Image (cartoon, rainbow, N blue to C red; front, side):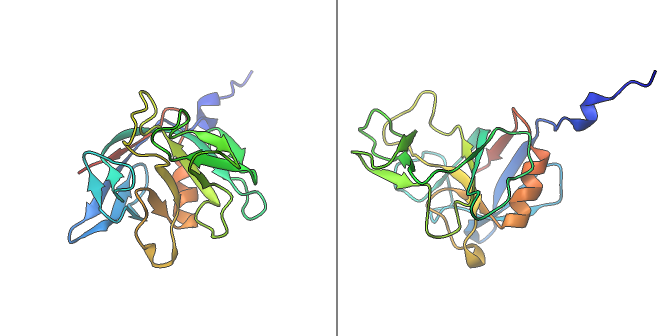
Length: 184
Protein backbone atom coordinates (compact mmCIF):
# COMPACT_ATOMS: atom_id res chain seq x y z
CA UNK A 1 0.00 0.00 0.00
CA UNK A 2 1.40 3.35 -1.03
CA UNK A 3 1.44 6.10 1.55
CA UNK A 4 0.33 9.57 0.51
CA UNK A 5 2.74 12.27 1.62
CA UNK A 6 0.41 14.98 2.90
CA UNK A 7 3.33 17.26 3.68
CA UNK A 8 3.93 17.88 -0.03
CA UNK A 9 0.57 19.68 -0.23
CA UNK A 10 1.17 21.83 2.85
CA UNK A 11 2.80 25.20 2.39
CA UNK A 12 5.48 26.10 4.85
CA UNK A 13 5.60 28.82 7.43
CA UNK A 14 8.05 31.22 5.88
CA UNK A 15 9.52 34.51 6.96
CA UNK A 16 9.68 37.22 4.34
CA UNK A 17 12.37 39.85 4.90
CA UNK A 18 11.94 43.45 3.72
CA UNK A 19 14.71 45.99 3.36
CA UNK A 20 14.56 49.42 1.74
CA UNK A 21 16.79 50.13 -1.25
CA UNK A 22 19.88 52.25 -0.60
CA UNK A 23 19.10 55.82 -1.58
CA UNK A 24 15.35 55.23 -1.97
CA UNK A 25 13.53 54.68 1.32
CA UNK A 26 10.11 54.20 -0.30
CA UNK A 27 11.24 51.25 -2.45
CA UNK A 28 12.35 47.88 -1.18
CA UNK A 29 13.19 44.26 -1.81
CA UNK A 30 11.54 41.25 -0.19
CA UNK A 31 13.38 37.93 0.18
CA UNK A 32 12.17 34.54 1.39
CA UNK A 33 11.83 31.20 -0.38
CA UNK A 34 12.19 32.78 -3.86
CA UNK A 35 14.36 35.33 -5.60
CA UNK A 36 14.06 38.94 -4.44
CA UNK A 37 10.82 40.74 -5.25
CA UNK A 38 10.55 44.52 -5.71
CA UNK A 39 8.07 46.38 -3.52
CA UNK A 40 6.87 49.86 -2.69
CA UNK A 41 7.04 51.09 0.91
CA UNK A 42 5.57 54.07 2.72
CA UNK A 43 6.46 57.63 1.78
CA UNK A 44 8.52 57.92 5.00
CA UNK A 45 10.26 54.58 4.45
CA UNK A 46 10.64 52.06 7.27
CA UNK A 47 10.02 53.59 10.70
CA UNK A 48 10.77 52.12 14.12
CA UNK A 49 7.95 53.95 15.90
CA UNK A 50 4.79 53.98 13.76
CA UNK A 51 2.23 56.75 14.22
CA UNK A 52 -1.16 57.08 12.52
CA UNK A 53 -0.80 59.03 9.28
CA UNK A 54 3.03 59.27 9.30
CA UNK A 55 3.42 57.45 5.95
CA UNK A 56 5.89 55.02 7.49
CA UNK A 57 6.07 51.26 7.01
CA UNK A 58 6.45 49.85 10.54
CA UNK A 59 9.64 47.94 11.38
CA UNK A 60 9.04 44.63 13.13
CA UNK A 61 7.96 41.07 12.50
CA UNK A 62 4.27 40.74 11.60
CA UNK A 63 2.17 37.62 10.98
CA UNK A 64 0.21 37.28 7.74
CA UNK A 65 -3.35 36.77 9.02
CA UNK A 66 -5.62 36.51 5.97
CA UNK A 67 -6.01 37.41 2.32
CA UNK A 68 -8.88 39.55 1.00
CA UNK A 69 -9.63 39.87 -2.70
CA UNK A 70 -12.04 41.47 -5.19
CA UNK A 71 -13.73 38.47 -6.82
CA UNK A 72 -15.27 40.75 -9.46
CA UNK A 73 -11.79 41.80 -10.66
CA UNK A 74 -9.24 39.05 -9.94
CA UNK A 75 -9.05 35.31 -9.46
CA UNK A 76 -8.84 33.93 -5.94
CA UNK A 77 -5.16 33.83 -4.88
CA UNK A 78 -3.59 30.39 -4.45
CA UNK A 79 -2.42 30.26 -0.82
CA UNK A 80 -2.78 28.26 2.37
CA UNK A 81 -3.64 31.43 4.28
CA UNK A 82 -7.34 32.05 5.03
CA UNK A 83 -8.96 33.84 2.05
CA UNK A 84 -12.14 35.94 1.96
CA UNK A 85 -13.87 37.99 -0.73
CA UNK A 86 -14.09 41.74 -0.18
CA UNK A 87 -17.68 42.97 0.05
CA UNK A 88 -18.92 46.43 -1.02
CA UNK A 89 -19.50 47.45 2.61
CA UNK A 90 -16.11 46.33 3.97
CA UNK A 91 -14.13 49.02 5.73
CA UNK A 92 -11.18 49.37 8.10
CA UNK A 93 -11.43 51.79 11.03
CA UNK A 94 -8.57 54.31 11.17
CA UNK A 95 -9.97 56.56 13.93
CA UNK A 96 -7.53 56.23 16.89
CA UNK A 97 -10.19 57.05 19.52
CA UNK A 98 -12.79 54.59 18.21
CA UNK A 99 -13.28 51.24 19.97
CA UNK A 100 -12.82 49.46 16.60
CA UNK A 101 -9.57 51.25 15.72
CA UNK A 102 -7.43 49.16 13.36
CA UNK A 103 -10.21 46.61 12.82
CA UNK A 104 -12.51 45.55 10.03
CA UNK A 105 -15.88 47.36 10.10
CA UNK A 106 -19.02 47.57 7.96
CA UNK A 107 -19.66 50.78 6.03
CA UNK A 108 -21.13 53.26 6.49
CA UNK A 109 -19.34 53.55 9.83
CA UNK A 110 -19.78 56.45 12.28
CA UNK A 111 -16.01 57.03 12.71
CA UNK A 112 -13.32 57.43 10.05
CA UNK A 113 -12.86 54.22 8.10
CA UNK A 114 -11.04 53.29 4.93
CA UNK A 115 -13.05 51.69 2.11
CA UNK A 116 -11.79 48.23 1.17
CA UNK A 117 -13.91 48.16 -2.02
CA UNK A 118 -11.89 50.79 -3.87
CA UNK A 119 -12.22 52.38 -7.29
CA UNK A 120 -8.54 51.79 -8.05
CA UNK A 121 -6.90 48.37 -8.12
CA UNK A 122 -4.53 48.43 -5.14
CA UNK A 123 -6.93 46.50 -2.87
CA UNK A 124 -7.83 43.87 -5.47
CA UNK A 125 -5.62 41.61 -3.32
CA UNK A 126 -4.86 42.52 0.29
CA UNK A 127 -2.95 40.63 2.98
CA UNK A 128 -3.95 41.62 6.51
CA UNK A 129 -0.98 41.82 8.90
CA UNK A 130 -1.11 41.65 12.68
CA UNK A 131 0.55 45.06 13.07
CA UNK A 132 -0.92 46.90 16.09
CA UNK A 133 -3.51 44.24 16.88
CA UNK A 134 -2.59 42.76 20.28
CA UNK A 135 -2.50 45.00 22.09
CA UNK A 136 -4.08 47.66 19.89
CA UNK A 137 -2.53 50.99 20.78
CA UNK A 138 -4.30 54.22 19.84
CA UNK A 139 -2.46 56.20 17.22
CA UNK A 140 0.19 53.52 16.50
CA UNK A 141 -1.04 52.87 12.96
CA UNK A 142 -3.93 51.16 11.26
CA UNK A 143 -4.61 49.37 7.98
CA UNK A 144 -0.98 48.32 7.46
CA UNK A 145 -1.40 45.74 4.70
CA UNK A 146 0.41 44.04 1.88
CA UNK A 147 -1.44 45.03 -1.31
CA UNK A 148 -1.00 45.68 -5.02
CA UNK A 149 1.35 48.45 -6.14
CA UNK A 150 0.40 51.45 -8.20
CA UNK A 151 2.02 51.94 -11.60
CA UNK A 152 5.70 52.79 -11.13
CA UNK A 153 5.76 51.51 -7.54
CA UNK A 154 4.84 54.91 -6.13
CA UNK A 155 5.02 55.11 -2.32
CA UNK A 156 2.21 53.80 -0.13
CA UNK A 157 0.74 55.35 3.03
CA UNK A 158 2.70 52.80 5.11
CA UNK A 159 1.88 49.46 3.50
CA UNK A 160 4.02 47.11 1.42
CA UNK A 161 2.95 46.86 -2.22
CA UNK A 162 3.84 44.41 -5.02
CA UNK A 163 2.83 43.96 -8.62
CA UNK A 164 0.15 41.28 -8.97
CA UNK A 165 2.46 38.59 -10.36
CA UNK A 166 4.94 39.00 -7.49
CA UNK A 167 2.20 39.03 -4.84
CA UNK A 168 0.73 35.81 -6.24
CA UNK A 169 4.21 34.17 -6.17
CA UNK A 170 4.64 35.28 -2.57
CA UNK A 171 1.19 34.04 -1.49
CA UNK A 172 1.76 30.58 -3.02
CA UNK A 173 4.69 30.17 -0.64
CA UNK A 174 2.83 31.32 2.49
CA UNK A 175 0.84 29.28 4.95
CA UNK A 176 -0.48 29.80 8.48
CA UNK A 177 2.25 31.17 10.72
CA UNK A 178 4.12 32.94 7.89
CA UNK A 179 5.58 36.30 8.85
CA UNK A 180 7.05 39.40 7.27
CA UNK A 181 10.09 40.91 8.96
CA UNK A 182 10.53 44.59 8.09
CA UNK A 183 14.07 45.67 8.88
CA UNK A 184 14.96 49.31 9.61
